[in-house]
Image 1: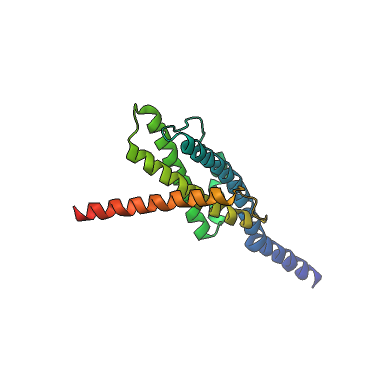
Image 2: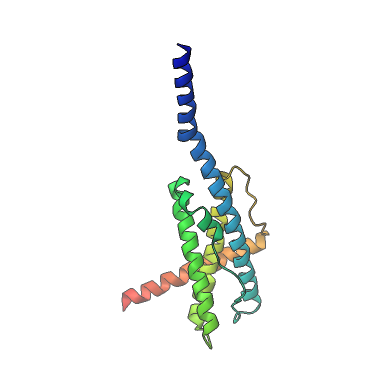
Length: 179
């Protein structure tokens, strides 16, 4: 009888580990790695926003947009809740778009003002959405929100830039529909 209890007790522990504890641990570790990398990207986005607010014609080229954290945990991101996973993938896709636009601006003699406005809007929306995603990842990682500390004025400025971009995009799509 003790032999059977020992076998099934060990089996129960393995099932508990594999079904509940290990996925929770994997989710926590994945969230921590992604939160650290997204925080790093957000710092770069805020630096670019600050530089662009001082010099509207300047698009800094010295900001790296690599994803070593994402690549390291790429096989484990399926452990994240689906809504967070979708937002993580959207964040990295938009970060790649920002990196591509930055490179395009470096190669252009005189960047198109409309593209620069779009760039500012994308950057602002990414900063706002990324901050929200960062808070969610940090909660999943088992920690409290340690995200970027922005004063109220900076938050309002970024939110207004994002709002202006959304309005501009809506106006452009309305004009296209009318044509």
